[in-house]
Length: 181
Length: 219
Image 1 (cartoon, rainbow over the protein chains, first blue to last red):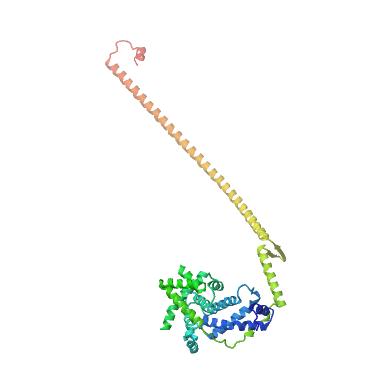
Image 2 (image 1 turned 135 degrees about the vertical axis):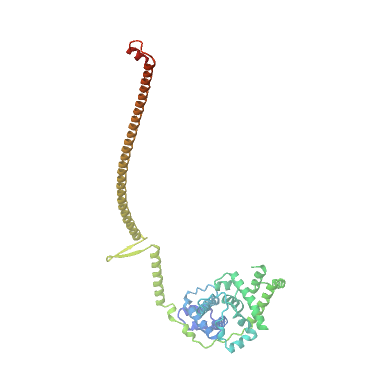
């Protein structure tokens, strides 16, 4: 049947239509949850991050001008919420240098089993990357965004996004080889 | 960033034609680092495409909906009020609005006039105090100079008097010494004359009557 566009749902939600807002959430919650899961590596934290993302989106919904895809805007907000998550965990440490290890102690056997499957190899290997590289790898391979879109979402230049991806690939090679062995 | 890296970025963005992609992959074979990156990227693409997303756990999506954020009348009113207050604050900063409460009266000034007035007043007061200080210092300096000059004059006159007296004393001493020397010479001269006369009187017998005129001519 007819499926309303994101913009239409947003207009309705801004006017106070709760049903439209819930439809919009239903459309993107799976993407956001799995994005958060790959970025923070833990189901509970991922759910918290996803909720914060949708709260932020709703608060800023009136300011959404419809410039660019809603999905890009959503991912940009999600990126900021993930940064906030890590800042809360480690307020005194740079997010660009070291891998985010905060979630590893929370990996449950179910998660490890899932990550060990063929399709989860990349998601698991990404956990060894610093947040700056992990974000670019996530948006490129899972989000399937172009470098220009990634640059816009992360507030960096396109060349920086490329450099971060290449650095991430160099590290992933080592991790994925180790996993393979 | 190298040409191969730029090509790889285009390949990752899906902007290469099949021919360009084939050419790019061939070029990567000669560069070990790019070859490995390409392999990992392909592996990552396969892994991402075969990723099975997890189901979202039950959560209260409705809790994210808040009527206070939507376009209600209150929101517009509060937003407008906020904007108006922000604009007013910006204008107050731009025009340097100053409010001064002094002894129960309030003064509102623009462009920092009040502050300039206060600064001018303080500067004038400081200048006046400086001027008075300078006058006192100048008067004191002039008095000191005058006293010093009087002292110098007194010392100079004392010196001149004493040196003049000393010079006169020395001059008189020289004169007396000269007169004494002259007298001594005269005495010696007359002594010799008298001795000579005595010698002549004893050696030459007096034949004729003594004639004072001859004596005076021979002397």
